[in-house]
Length: 133
Ligand SMILES: [Zn+2]
Image 1 (cartoon, helix red, strand yellow):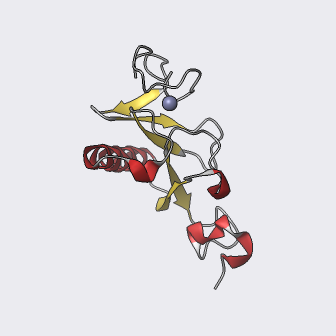
Image 2 (cartoon, helix red, strand yellow; image 1 turned 180 degrees about the horizontal axis):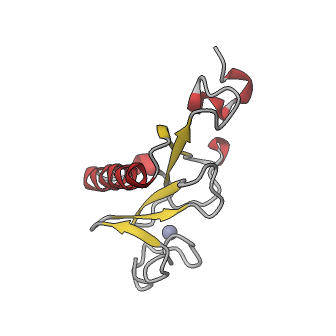
């Protein structure tokens, strides 16, 4: 997002991605980058171009753009890593949910058999003691 855009929050790391060399995929309304602190190899982030903290507040065209990049990045990763056999897709919306960068972003986390001891429950693991059921 251009620095002159009034919606762009000064100092926002995701608003500064344009031209940073970190962008792997992009469309009109969203970008995809590699996560700087990957949970698994290939862990990627899909980020709307518009600065908005709450991912659930996106407009429908932005949702579509995000989903398009999630699918494209998934195809890209599958093409270069045949071991990937599952995915976690997640949005942390709000501080109570663990959001640390207040520019909405979706995590796309490739999963491989045996990459953790007990994957059952997947994203339920956000409350670790309630992951298994
Ligand atoms: Zn931003």
